[in-house]
Image 1 (spheres, one colour):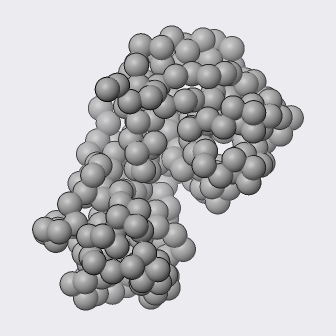
Image 2: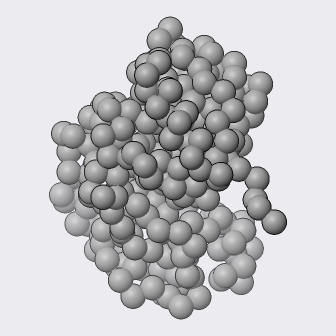
Length: 248
């Protein structure tokens, strides 16, 4: 039986871009474009009314900023994921989007015919962030912080490594608990402790650190990933997989 298509709300003020995206998304049976909004207010109203799976949003909207719109949408429709899709990919703009709760940040310059595939990955739990135009990677840490965190990560217990490997594989706390034969509450508590020790603030940063440190070069056999981390614009960025693959 064919799974239901991923329901998309598009928010972009550029008419020609919207028409192009409509045609592009129409070529895939896996996604369904429900509506197009041209302002931040329209995007908020449409998200509350339609409860879409994903909101594909330009980072610079009129009347209500994309950051504000993202916060409003996630507060009122928490099951929806917001994906920024923009030609503006500087670190400051991307950090604001990430802080507002955006699940991913795609570059219009890098994602073209494979947009539907990228949206499918994000819907499945992967996180894709474009390479910032003014930084090496996202999110950014100082060299000393990165080295210290990577050292601490590599010296963690084998059980914690299996937990992190399962997290990077795109598994939920419930799925991880089944893999490790512990309760979801134990998984949540252990992740909090690991993040505090490594000085990272969320699962995305923990996954990035795990991939960059080489922790997953020899993954535990009982924590196989269910997705691949893809990075737009050719360099590694965030979450949830075992291997780094690249967009062409």
